[in-house]
Amino acid sequence: MKASSRLLNSSLSKLDGSIHEQRMRSGTTLREKMAAAAMVPIFGQNVSDKYDLVPDWTSREVSTGTTIMAVEYDGGVVIGADSRTTTGAYIANRVTDKLTPIHDRIFCCRSGSAADTQAIADVVTYQLGFHSIELDEPPLVETAANLFKASCYRYREELTAGILVAGWDRRKGGQVYCVPIGGMLVRQPVSVGGSGSSYIYGFMDSNYKPGLSKDQCLELTAAALSLAMERRRLQWRRGQTGKHL
Amino acid sequence: MLEETGPEWLSEEVKTGTTIIAIEFNGGVVLGSDSRVSAGASVVNRVMNKLSPLHDKIYCALSGSAADAQTIAEMVNYQLDVHSIEIGEDPQVRSAATLVRNISYKYKEELSAHLIVAGWDRRDKGQVFATLNGLLTRQPFAVGGSGSSYVYGFVDAEYRRGMSKEECQQFVVNTLSLAMNRDGSSGGVAYIVTIDEHSTEEKVILGNNLPTFFDQ
Image 1 (cartoon, rainbow over the protein chains, first blue to last red):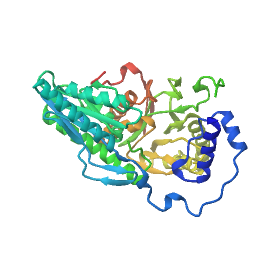
Image 2: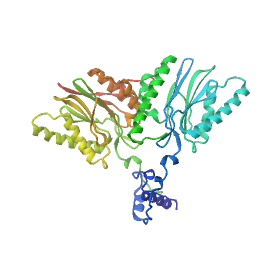
Image 3: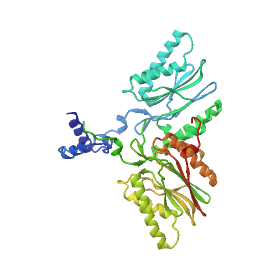
Image 4: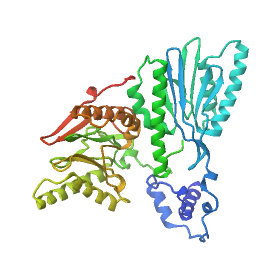
């Protein structure tokens, strides 16, 4: 029952003709291909495709198509992000602040769905604030990171959030924790995230060394973000074929 | 739904998920590639040389579908031999690139391969041409393949005009090493080809001799 309704759906989407519904056929088995070829009557033609009446970005999720970066140095952390939020090809906000304070000395860098990351950050801010009052001392960065991980992992089927948690505490100094989509948690001396981050892995690997000073970290972050934004800018101009997350 | 389909890699297309790079210097070009050929999750060839000769002083770097890329290279090799006999002298790099582009553009719906053509000729010395999706453009350097995404930032930052032959070779080796470390579809050994007026030199750099970076 399930297989036949799925085949019906895929045949309908092909007739629809909209590029948003096209699916890669290369992964289908022989049995599926034979079944699809054998059947399905033609439905009536529509006067206009439903996507012509309103621009398609109104139905797309708001995404921070993003580059974020965080670097540890002896005595603290440097974090950075670009400022573009997109819905499809429309830039909904060109001055977004993706660096969100969670506590006095703990920040998070947000990438992925704007709504999901804002909601998670609000929850963690509340939880960490409460915890810090109970403890009567500033919270640990590792605690904040674990709170993010707890939410991201528990609701991983529903969420699309890639987060970098960075801050300073008295016990371990500057720390960067990476909580990517799926809800894993790992501490790294330097980490990048977001869809623009692919382009700067090579640059980061070759230019980061342990033991950089604060100013060197600031320069590295600024350079890496500019390189990633330049490549993403070209990607947009070439024709919006890039992924948004 | 319950039928036996066998391991995925038997039915997956064989791809050279790859990193390729070509860069020109004053007097010649340097080409580089990794050596991994994958079919799904399986590495079917870990030592494939993706730098394919089109003529004595013109090479191309293969990426994308292994079958498509190899076939294009062989066809152009033949066409270029015929052409060079007809004109009675060594062909130009631009001619080779045009032949590659003609095939890539005409069959662009059926093919899935990107070849970077680079070489030396008497008229314009070292030249690098990109032929992605059927365009033809001369560039100071070009990167391609799945691993190239990870090194766009690096090559943008590190490239300078007027590098010497040795600096270009080091640039190519560094780029390949960084990409091979990040891209799951690139790996193995690095092949480097240096073409200039006097010679065409092919070199292999084994995995343990590649440059390493801070987390290795």
